[in-house]
Amino acid sequence: MDIISVKDLSFSYGDGIKVLDGVSLTIEEGSYTTIIGHNGSGKSTLAKLMAGLLMIKEGEIRIFDLKLDLNNINKIRQSLGIVFQNPDNQFIGSTVRDDIAFGLENHRVDPGKMDEIIDRFAHIVHMEEFLDKEPNNLSGGQKQRVAIAGVLAMGPKVIIFDEATSMLDPQGKEEIKQVIYDLHKNEKMTIISITHDIEEALNSDHVIVLEKGKKVLDGDAFSVLSNFKMLKAIGLDIPFTFKVSEAFKNKGIDIKKCKDLEGLVEAICQLNLKN
Image: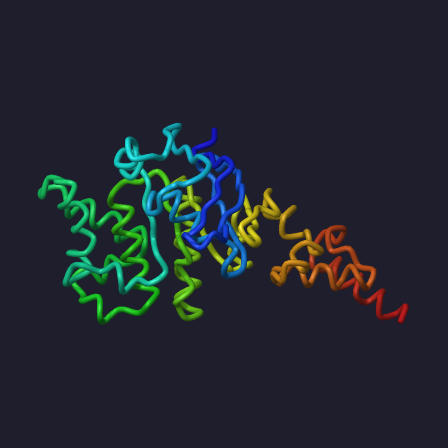
């Protein structure tokens, strides 16, 4: 079942240059979708349009089978959350607990139920030991995990991650990528991740590639990321595991036919003997 449908979506910021140009796509409920592309490809603009942060000028977006417009935006936002790239801009409370509680207070959640909700989502993002800490004392990755917990506490069915790892160090990036993967796998959430990290795309089950405002590839992770010719043509990297596989293939070794590590070692030894 499609939870999001985008049809003939075009958008410009007023200079007449289309940031998005006739983009159509669908996202299935429960899927983990990565949208990749260079800076300027239109991927973050697409995220903001889907979250209702920009007004649709041309085309249509339907979410939960509701047309995304002024009449439905508030209803849609009740089930859709977004995590931005800079966690420092998302903190409001003086402690981790206060920050997660902020959205609950705005939704008038019974104060007697708040601690249970806060504890649950702090646990999901592995921040339960930091609930009484000040945000300034956290690492970038920890701050982003708190931001995710705050969004989760609102009970969304869909979470959009808009370059959520781009401002983090390598450790922080790995932490957030693992949280995103776990939310999809364990919590069965619909995940949309706007990213330039090709390795993250490898972990998803649906990949969409944008280039200069147009959709150029759309499919499962393997079929999209193994399209080396197209990815290279638009200047995108190839996942490391695919590079290794391609390197072996160029040497006459098909990794897919090697049943285990022992079979791979044997194939390499045979290649050396031939040389």
